[in-house]
Image 1 (cartoon, protein in one colour):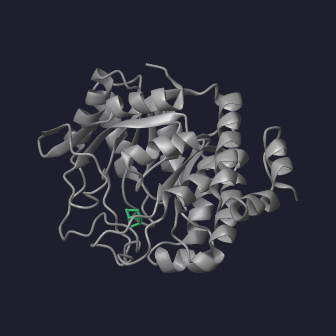
Image 2 (cartoon, protein in one colour; image 1 turned 45 degrees about the horizontal axis):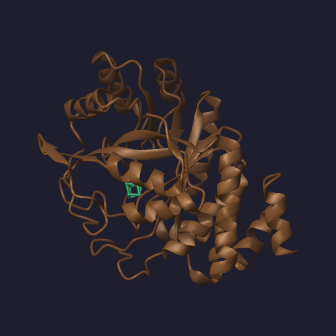
Length: 343
Ligand code: SF4
């Protein structure tokens, strides 16, 4: 396989698993890494026109009942922690609406075996507040019945999340000991049966170094096999003193960007974004490596004490909820990266 040939072919068609592994192994030098990023940007431009859009997100809308919690996750570690009250969720949705942002996600923890009815109640309350022109994604763990998802579809929900982070079964079991990979895979197919699109995610830097590239390729292609895939985000492993993996090495920006760029060469026009673990500055590098085209810019969350170093300070606090508006940073990013934001 020739490096330049693989990149040339990637401009014309999705790369194969063998080519993806070849690219991971051959983009450790800065020169080749930059060539990879340039190809990923070219694919993004051809597929999406490089037009970006602001989105919002409300976190902690459902509690996580996994035991043990995922080893890399700092959420839900405070005893007695409660999910966000529905009134605050509705206020968050109204805030997005006032600011002209019409797409947002609701995210929360997993309750395995749950029918997920509380999500229906939350969405209903948002619509009852008159917010009918909002595109809502739901990402509350792989725990919801098909009937609930059909109900959500009728209400106007477009997609549901089933986030794997990694699909190597042994590693999954180690880092997500309270979760169930098989069940999650079935859930991803249930989303299709309910007539909805799938949102998923991968965490860079989560697996052992020895099999990391192979694990990335397996995870990328396992997720690519879902024909109803709508979007995918790349998180970046960041240790926090509160998590069991506190002494695991932080994922480098270069590695996360290479994962993102190779994902672009596979997923093509799909919405492919940066997520937890990326600082605002690092997100600029993510766009230069092919991320896009959503820009998560308005965030509403319960006050948190983790990841203080990389999460931007709240723009304001209202009723004990933190509101963050990073649109100014995102506009600056768009200028640097020479992409357009549709406002
Ligand atoms: S399912 Fe999500 S919220 Fe729950 S422990 Fe795992 S990563 Fe954290």
